Length: 368
Ligand code: ATP
Image (cartoon, rainbow, N blue to C red):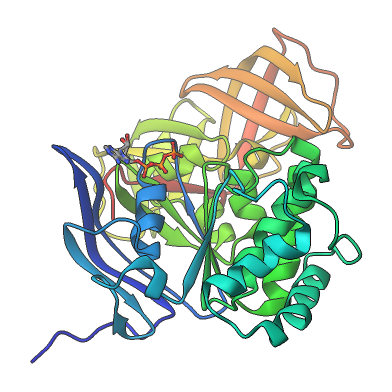
């Protein structure tokens, strides 16, 4: 019997791609739902762009299938797939008007000329460029050019839009503004977006779900909140935001929690579920913003983990302050917001750090 193909808007089944002896994409399987804003996130060279190019049809996988709504398109050429791609370099025609740049997409697909005007104007409204249709592309700002590139890619009403670091060339402020714009455009049109970025903040801000990639493999797929709060691997935890990771030996199991004792009143408690034993070494992760900091000797506020230590360094970062503290479990970082009331602390101060058991998690170190 033939293998069942995914019915999702986009499905990758065991997709691999090698360049020489290097596995750029290594056995990637994932499904993207209709209308979803899905991001491929990871460091440079992890295989995001190659994955996207295989969905677009610009690269042929060595193994696996690319499936669009149940149709196997692995061998279908790029121009016959119902998807479109937007690049970091917008590749507009600089001397042509905004209108002609957008209408170019329609010409390529041989859409009757009588439909052009209405469809171009509609798309210019969606990307907030009404009234600029006669302007030459080279007379536009970077942000406006990016909007034209989007309009040109969307005017053919593709089933999915593939975006490869489309905001990479913009300055930080414009980038943030365009992130909101992209999200708005995507929800207005309901088109499936697959977005490649190495910027974790960008992926967290825009995506319905994120696939975090490392060395050609997918390490975790989940909503921004899941990825941030429940990272499954040390790589994901470290790539998405900052993290305290402590290698510790389990002293005792109490119900579902592992307890590590580091001193008379100092202990770390972390939920582990089943399958762990005393004596085993585990990696415990806790986000800096979860770590409370008080002068040593103050009443214990949290019932879970508590460590005493000495402040080694204080870094003021505007919105929040980082406290680097040396403890018997190693150096930990606590982030406190500018508006929190804190006793005055300085390097050398003795402090107590604490957090609730469920605010920490165990990290595995392999891929899924
Ligand atoms: P970046 O964010 O830097 O673009 P990426 O995660 O998108 O990185 P890819 O561009 O997919 O990564 O590249 C994955 C790996 O495959 C890299 O090591 C890259 O050097 C290699 N690679 C990509 N394209 C080719 C090619 N055409 N020929 C040879 N090697 C390639």
